[in-house]
Image 1: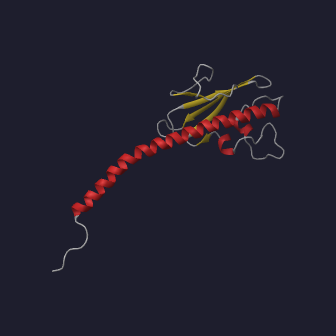
Image 2: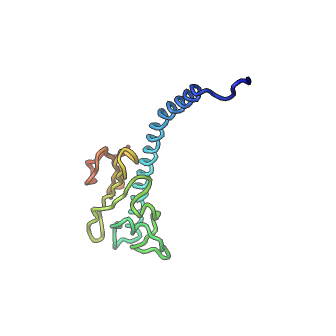
Image 3: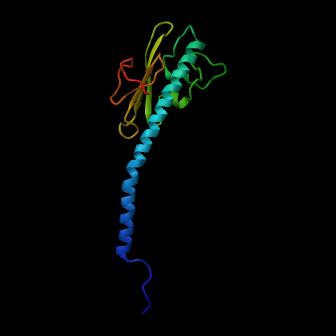
Length: 158
């Protein structure tokens, strides 16, 4: 009778248990890192839109700030115009990027002298846990709860 080759069932179960323990430790860290990356991307997106708004206001002084994200984006940029300025990428101009949705509101005046920009997680606690906003002062502001009005009462991101 020759010796048995391979692993016993007990040995295989121990290896599977060890792998499951390692996975249980790693998954929450991965999810937190993903949320951090999405939030960092959201802050970058808000800063990009603020910069584009200032450039748009300078390029089109009779219009003022853009009233839609689509006006800051665009695909036909030769020559750029107030409806298609091509100052931000088309993904950001569509209003959703890296687990966050972006919206622009509060555009008032002729020329438009105010705006409010909001970045909200698409799925709270999966794509992000913080909400971001900004207005014409171009300061990125943050809150742990949903933001409906962005003004100086919302604390700034340090």
